[in-house]
Structure formats: C-alpha cells, structure tokens
Length: 228
Image (cartoon, rainbow, N blue to C red):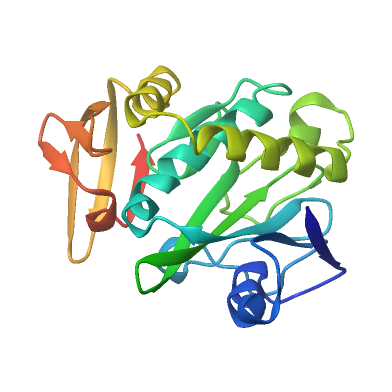
C-alpha cells in the first residue's frame, strides 16, 4: 500500500482530493501527525493534534451506489480495531465512542466520474491525545488505558479491516452496527437543518436509517446526534 506521511497538513481529506488524479495507484493513504483545519460531516471542525491517527484512505474504481452506505461499513471496521483496546461503540452514523466520550470519527466522500467513483475515507482516531479543549466531550485510547499506541501499526490494522468490511453483505454490516449501537434504547437529541427532536433511538434499519420513536431518519438529514 502506498502511504504518504506528513508532519502537518490542513486536512488529509482536502489534500487527498487535491492530488488523487496525480497518483498512479488504485489505492493510497495520506496520513498526518496533525491537522490544522480538519473537518467532519458538514464541515464541522475536528480537533486533530499530534498524538492521534489522522488519515484518508483513497480507493479508485469504487461503485458510486455504495458510497452512502460506506460510512456505516467503515464505522464498523474501525470500531472493531478500537475495540481491541477499549470498550467501543458506534454512535450512528459515524462516531466511535466509549462511555467517556468520542474516540474516533469517519468522513466518507466521493467524486463520481462516469460509471465509477473515487472514494475518500477520512478517519480520525484519538490514540495518544493527552487532553482536549474545554467543551469537547472526547477521550483517547491513552487516557482510557494509560498505554501508548503505535499509530503505524494501528493504521495497518485499520486499513486491513476496512478492506475486509467493504466486501461484507449489507445485512452483516447492519447486524454489527446494531450490536454496537451506543444509542440503542436511549433518549437522544437529533439536530437537522432548522429542526431538532428528542426521542428514544431504537435501531438502524436495513437501509442504514436510524429508527426512533419519533420517526425514521436518513443519514443525510441529521446533522448531529447527542446522547442525553
């Protein structure tokens, strides 16, 4: 696997999307020690200091129809790896959490060209981060366990599990998501564009939608999920 390593970038996602046409490889990874303008879904800022694992995995020749579901697939894959170190869950649709806070996040984007696409799988995992800004409810593997993580080895493991999970049938992915769903049977606040609702989350259906007592929600229509 071709891996580009940088000490500091604005965003591995933005850099990958800028250079992918110049890289003569079907797959490659951009990884940085820190990001200064990292972003999550809907361009929300993502705290990415030195110590964490920040990367974008680029795959060319991807099926465009699979891109929306890939967020859930990658969330399940990364939860599996993080779960080797801490008790990890998935907060639908793209956060990896422990009972003490968020420990990772996923951002999947695609550029469609004809019948194929290039998918950009961005992820941040708080491995060796020592502290977080006030108001950020997050934690790290180091804070949870007291142990330092080898980010290079973790990256290899994550890429391997992503590759494996991308070939799983959708129903197997949904089964895994529901098994590790952090908000299952819990009251949550759902925030969308100009609206918010508070109700009990039940499960994720076969289409990847969140089923709650107050309705069924697509990934694209929910800006944020807050556990209450």
